[in-house]
Length: 480
Image 1: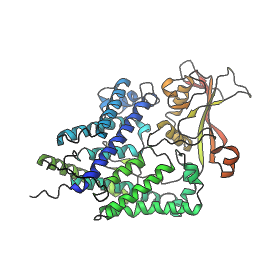
Image 2 (image 1 turned 30 degrees about the horizontal axis):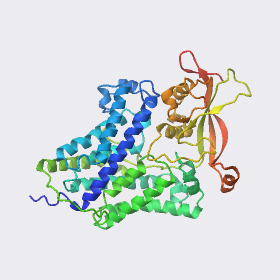
Image 3 (image 1 turned 60 degrees about the vertical axis):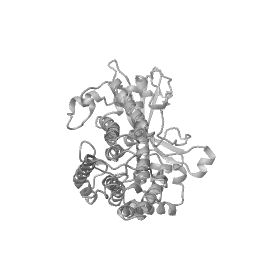
Image 4 (image 1 turned 90 degrees about the horizontal axis):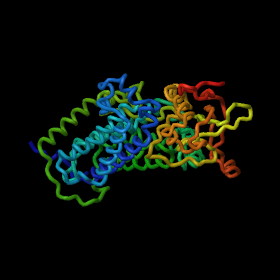
């Protein structure tokens, strides 16, 4: 049997670029985990991992933390994952044997899998599963001294196809504004985390908004099929996806979703697009070929339900059919929020509440707060609390488990929690009373922007959390 079909040196450079970019995203993901876990998931966090492990068996959430958990162990695991991933960015496995490359690439996948599976609502985003699925395939791509295996290159295309086509289908089945091309009349203003240029995108002429939506539909519903066409069509399709994802990068903050999509698209570019000299490449050993074929068969078998989901009228969005996130469904913004609400948390250090009480606002790092503050660039970094605060403004069902504990942490001036914020108005001191209010936010008009210097206009709508103070047992006691 001839194995000439098994590898393709034309994708040597794109495989190398894909690996470097994926490793860099791993670094970001682990640094995010290390910086935020104590307040969100630590032993004394908002949703403690130890409590989750006591009620969740290993088979439902495979994780190293089932064998041992402490905040120190979590920190070691997260920073260790960042270190291994950084080494991969700099090519630590480029000249290693195949089995060494596989073991090293398996490390960040296992470590991040362990975090995601105990991360609860803080790790419920689609890009977590996307990183794990791409990371699993990366284990078997081989080192730089060997040509990339064709079956794995096809699996990367299959992942990119499901990502883009799934996002397109969820839009067509979702909000009517996607079909009448008007969703971007609202989206740049109401997206979870606007960026520095979102105000300008929002004020583009409406015909351009319709062109944006039309281009999105073309990229997600038509272009993905060209990924499986002969070259240069496949590379052209990937290039179109890279351009459209770059557009999303500059128009909003979506963690590493867009950067990871670009990374997947890079793997589809052949040597005509990435002109790097290809070195002499070794032949892959027989055992490796068998492993790659076995992994390919496994992924194809697990693809049945995600593929069926793509054509289902009740399409699921961002869902994992297996506990290891090996093959998943993707999609975003099937429905569009047309009015922006924000939960604003305020507190006072006055001993008694009066009609003249002065309330001071907690400022978050990414989400809108002070109307005069320009929306910052956060992505590809991910502010988990800020994102969940956006969901909390949509419905209390997203925040029932953690918003009240967050209020208690702020009343207690909990240091790990305060580190998640941009500004603590009490400089580490305990406030006496705290409340949360719901506000209606909208971007200023160009005229309002010139006259006031503000990026937002806001008006209060009502309470989101009753005014409370810290009781003797450390829980918040409502006073109104």
